[in-house]
Image: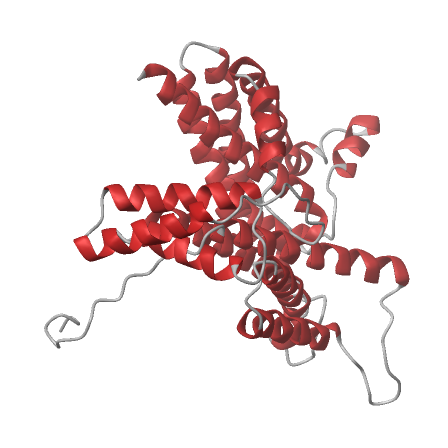
Length: 365
């Protein structure tokens, strides 16, 4: 039975201003904490804090940072606490989940092979969640007014920047033009008079304010016209597509071709290598998926070279999604964290393909 039938008020979720940016900060901090922790432990020989029966694992520091990141936005109302909390939460969850191998094994095996794909799967699900909240949360009619009220509340104890002040006025004007009721219109107009009566804030730079890098994004847009972006996508898809075949070729041809060619193919197999006999068919599945995904990415690159650019974009997106959701999970199992850079490149290519597709659509309309 719905809330309306029970006589309860309907609940509308209002996306917080810059929510996507806070999520991005959390994901970047998450990825950086896991990567840097593994790198530091590997370079220093996996040192331990404590002695005897005492071992202070970094999962404890992760829990402390998670708790701090949750408390800060509950205690303080300054705008700068949100990115701070997002970064602390990302670092905390990275330090926590880095030790997942100890939690899922009776022997507390930090190096358990399944730990790496679990960490990657959590990161991938977080990205999917980011995309879902970006698309599916529908703002109610009074979302602009809610944002403006939040801005005004913050401005009472924290001077906004010039851009934030102008955005506040824009939200109030747009809401006053199309209000859900006359009462809302009067409220918006009164708030607009209050804001316009206030002196405009002086331009200032806040060193502690972590804001979306709009200037950097605009610079990237200007630096990447359609032709240059297409060639970067083609080269990236070709490179990743050929890289997908390194393991199948090293397995199929490594034993048949000796000399320098055989040594070269063997050297392409980076990371830890798990005995094939102990994988129960997962290794063969990985090889088959790598061949298929490699073909898709190479086909996408070829299509982008021709007049079938839209088809190339679709094939490339399918290939990269298949790689990120299936092949990379297996690669993290077999080769652990040696495939992080490759995965990041695939994510950038996927973003580039979506952006290039949007340009093609806008150009045709």
